[in-house]
Image 1: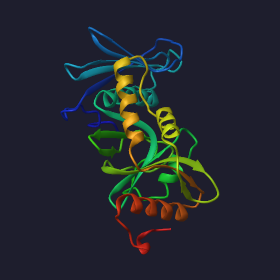
Image 2: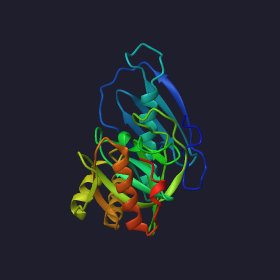
Image 3: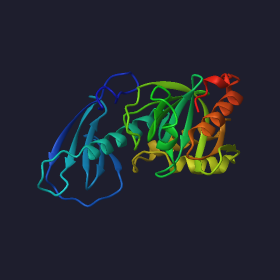
Image 4: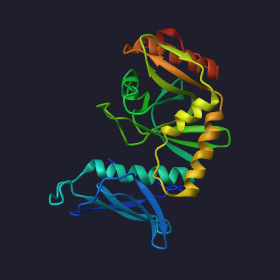
Length: 259
């Protein structure tokens, strides 16, 4: 599932191996620390991971659920990889964001929201070829150009997602409603909501400063708003197509907007 996904800035694959452990530990927040032996990511009840920045490899120790079973815990492995990817992106001028993303007319629309906001519902309005993801989206910012990338970290959308990327055009904070419409949002509120949805471990002050700086620049970019949307896909798709057209100047014929 994760093969070939975790790469560094030079495009080299980061090798990760998994080792089961029977140690009982207390649940906690994912944290990161640095030492002469490398970078360590820890969530006491689920995993303990170490990453060597020079060798570009590491090991993830997955903690058994009951301290005795050797049954694999794929969610613990995914959590460890999320911590690693979030940390690496923050240090490279990017972010890992709790969000869905869809491609409209060749441009990416980022739909930000925490659990229950409707990320999977919205992504489900689009075909697999149009959906970048429904849970965690990788963002890279080079100058004024922002690119969104799919990741293997999926939510409740029960279907395969394509590995792809697209230039960002529109950022929307999700809010369920009875009608579909896009509303303005202040820069301060936009940044506050965006930071709540940035996924990265705590403890590395430098990475945290870089993540906040990237988020502040991203939030200051034009194209942010709030999306209110119903359970029906047709109205939401039409509103999003119009939003992308206003943002990019690229229009889509109405007969291509599937309701």
